[in-house]
Length: 403
Image 1 (tube, rainbow, N blue to C red):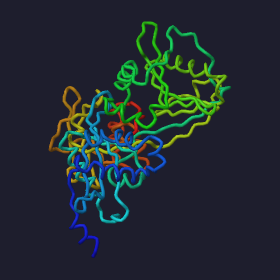
Image 2 (cartoon, rainbow, N blue to C red):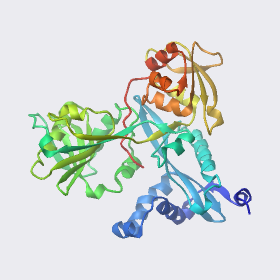
Image 3 (tube, helix red, strand yellow):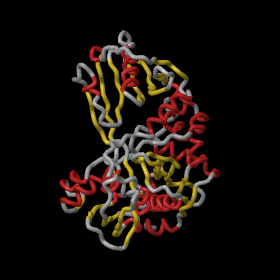
Image 4 (tube, rainbow, N blue to C red):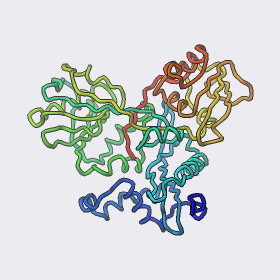
């Protein structure tokens, strides 16, 4: 029997609580969860970690009879884009049993899930790619980087005299969330963490980490860090600071471990000048692409997008999308007195041709229009390129979550 005929006997539908164990089994297979992993954390704990997926997420699957053979999971998250909250569909749990490879099941799951996102007003989607080329072909594009660094003990900054102080706190201390909330409102592309996002961010290693908070002179939490010390290395899981004082306070705390460690290792999720901050800046740094995003609904996303005050001339975008017909076409906008995009039927003075992948990396300011034109990712006059660069806020993307 050919694959097309076999596919006709399969059914695509929502995955419900009655298929919880099937979904968990498929996730364990996709993420290669071994018996050793299960014995380490306990199968019951593993299932409890995955319970929020069944309760909170939109899960679409392909079934052979009652057997779940392929699925895609979408979390209901929110992100800050240039200071404005957007509903975001967080894609994870993407997988198909190998005996059903080549049936085109995942393409159908993606399109169905994206349709569901559109109906829920999730105009943008994020995912962590197991294959950048694969997801790029489906309309996602890189929007953030991760920089891993190694600092030797002798390179740690000398302590600064500061009015505030550090405290080690419980991992779920309310002051951590308070500091992050202030941080996430001012950094572009960041997750706006509700309870589900916090749980997902740390669920695999929270028990292994220690948390500390920097309090300023008035007692306000202005920064925090999750870390662990093992094998004479200080590992920074996440470091958040809302001002320079908090940054220096956290590094004071790291430096206080000088006698215990030989190296400090961590990750940065934006182009923070760490080497410039250190007196001896000759440190190891490695930059890698991190998360990808795609626009789910071009027109609605652009209508809500916070353009700059320079947005006062019309713009026409000719967009192609490899999967979504509603995103392929000509989108023309004029801007009102609040610099919000208003759809119009008439072609405007500035015209840009690009695909949906290029559009998302452009709007999130991961790459500028001038750079994208130079490498052939968009077509526009020099005037149009200059204009579109001027109306997109110049905020660097920052995203540290993982789901």
